[in-house]
Amino acid sequence: MSIEFDDKSEALISPEDFYGPHEKIADICILTFSYSVLEKVLEQFSHKKVADPGTANGRIPVYLLEEYGVLFYMSPIGSAVAGTILDEVRCLTGATKFISFGSCGILDEEKCNGKIIVPSEAYRDEGFSFHFEKTDDYITVSKSAELSEILSALQVNYVVGKTWTTDAIYRETVNKKNARKSEGCVCVEMECAGLQAICNFRHLDLYPFFFGGDLLNDSSWSRGTLGSDVEKSNQIDCFELALKVAQRINFS
Image (spheres, rainbow, N blue to C red):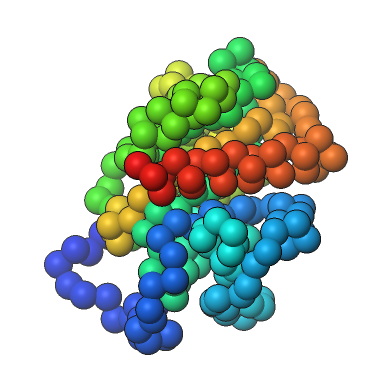
C-alpha cells in the first residue's frame, strides 16, 4: 500500500492551530544539524531568542543573529521531525527562505572529494515528503541553480548532483547504493527530500548544501571524517558559508 497524498481536503491541524498568528521577524533562516555549530554561533554571535517551538523531547530555540538579521536554529535529524519543525519555525517567525547544510555520505568520491555538494534532485526514500507532494521517485531542489550561481560568485569549489534521502541509515544496502549511483546520485543524507516537499507545500524557498563525511564504497563503508574534529570544523566553515549565502539572497 503506497502512502496516500491528499490534496482534496484540508488538514485537521496546522502549526497556526498550536501557536496562533505571529508577526514576521525575519525572512531568511539558517538551520544546522550540528551541536558544534550551535555552540560556536551562540558563543561568537550577538543573538536573541525569538521563538521556542516545543516537542516532547524538549524545546528547539530559534535565534535572531542581530548583526545579520538572519534567523538560526539547530534542527532535529530526519525528514519527518526536521520538516515539521521547519513548518513551525515558518509559523512563528514568518521566515520564507531556509538555508540548510550538513554532512552527508559520499557515493561518488571522484566527483565530490573536497567539494561542497549542491543537490539538484532528491530521491524520496523516506515517508514524510509523500504527505506534501504527489508520489514520484525524485523531488526537484528548486533553488539548486540559484545556489550554484551564488557559490560561483563566492568562488566556492562545488559539484551539482542528485542526492539520496533515506530515513534508515542502517539499511543503505549495496544494491540500493548502486541503483542510486547509477541514476546520478552523488551522496546520501536524511532530510533534503522532506525539507523540499514541505517548502514546496508552504511556498517557501530551500537552499540546501552538503559536505562529505563518510564514504560508501563499492561493497563497504568508510567512516571518513564522520564524528571527528575535522567534521566539526567543516560544519562551522559551512555555517560561515551559509551566512554569505544569506547575504547574497538578501540582496538579490
